[in-house]
Length: 64
Image (cartoon, rainbow, N blue to C red; front, side):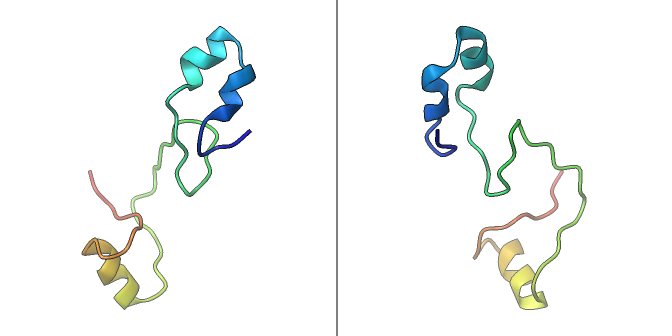
């Protein structure tokens, strides 16, 4: 079973396949479709925040 490839569906029944196929987990490792209700995120430093908002590094930023 791997979360990256979806191989866990190989032994699943048709109902599980219908609702679980195509799902890709984020680095947060959720077990269902993610809903992030937070309006802000923590950064290691102001420079890290600036780089994240500029798209220079991967990370979560507030958007609507």
